[in-house]
Length: 347
View 1 (cartoon, helix red, strand yellow):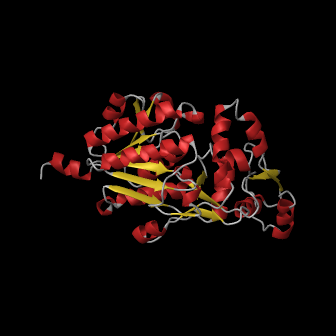
View 2 (cartoon, helix red, strand yellow):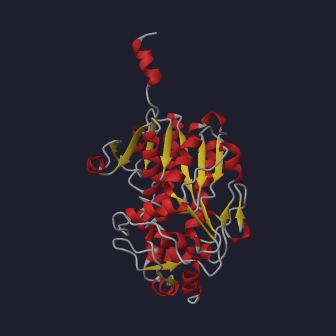
View 3 (cartoon, one colour):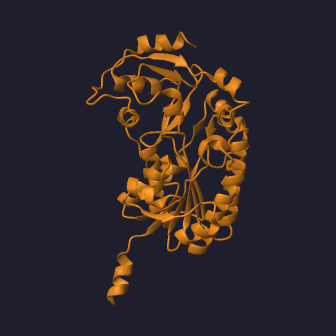
């Protein structure tokens, strides 16, 4: 066999990651790299991005420019579409054109598209347990855009583009800086003295540890021969059945009881008419007012199990990344009765 052909056989597969500087995009990119992929990342400031993450192949370009995405996707077997406009700005003008560029590039290169899905696609008629075939009738503008994204991906799959959607709960973990955990439950940058409870008393909520989500996605991608042209999988992640399990875990990791108050939804209501970001956040409140859980039965049947980091380990890594823990913080038990009394007195 000629040497050139032999080298081609052992050449690493290429994954193009759009949104590699973000939480889920970065986590998937690092996991792909660990599993032997060559990671190519598109960025409008590639030189600066390369200084922060030199292990990736950075390509100068803009996800809003079809030609840039097409060139970056040349030779790629996978395109991770994890790019979103920051701060919810201009979603209606930017999100769908960016996805259309990804679809066009995948059609040309033959790459599979991997999309991180959300629960925003669903309204209360799909609650409390959501399967992959549950109806998608969202209540919000952002949710309607997410539904349209998946409709376009489904249409593309019928024309030969391979699509994989992996849906999970609210992210937490290193790199998940723009999340309900880091911006709603805790305050980063200093040791914790208090927490905010986002859900109503006794209302369950679903979380997803970012490294587990990335691991799940890459495991599914590696089973490409078993995947159909259009596949969706739901993760269970961390099911907080009463809204207190995450609070308990934070206190165990911190090693002391913390003051727990309610998240100030009322302040969002007052400010949202004037601040577009807060208006978008306010629209998501319905997801905290009743139990919302994704069923991972299909995922377990396909992979055998769902990757799952022990909760306290995940919380420790998250708080450490947010600058909320001193060095060598001990893991101590929490007096649940004392903590629960504090929480319920504020309900």
